[in-house]
Image (cartoon, rainbow, N blue to C red):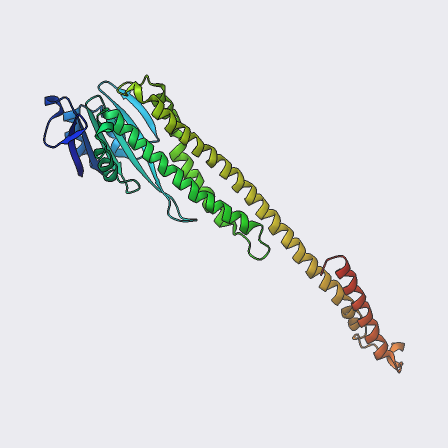
Length: 315
């Protein structure tokens, strides 16, 4: 579906003009297009067939391909949906050359309408050509990554508190869910480092070399996000191991308590079993104070065992 299409001459939007007839360039934005819809743009902008297939497949990792006549950039959008919920992953594919930019967006994670509107309010940036659009899209995308990693950092901090909380334990499945979020996030973010290095080099075809410092700054922000993801993964691994260790310790403590009570109950049970055998020739049965002596003995042994177990922190 076509979202917007315009030609920009000297940074100003001019609708209904072919860039070939002016000194400007065109920016076309489409959302969830079919292969037939993109073929119509291919005839006009001469897209490479492989790039066209990648733009429709939605299975590509972030990358930058250079073709004859245009370059093709794949980006991953990420939306945070709450702790333990899967991230929403989308795609933004960008065909760009010296006279055109075509953005193909899949998903709702990062609408491009607001980006176009903001750029149109700053003609001085649009005046710098298609590279300005590419830079703005990547810059906004990395800002989105920064926001998402901040949210995940808060989730990891909550999990850390739960792991070491004496009253509430952190379920292992909750730790695993956040771990899965980080894995999905890494798959969307880390592959973009290589394309960003190419863009920051200032030697990539169809990229204005004057933007190399801007791309380098965005790359630094991206690398910081990747570093934070690495740190969060290590923290989660440690939290998971600590949680399992604490569960094991808790189970051992429970077993000790159970064993202590079983030991305390064993003495009265043994004596009651002996005197419940109902033999006729048991001399203790004729004792006048035998019943009270046995009760006192059982109570005394049980009390002594109870105090012994309490002293050794078994109870």
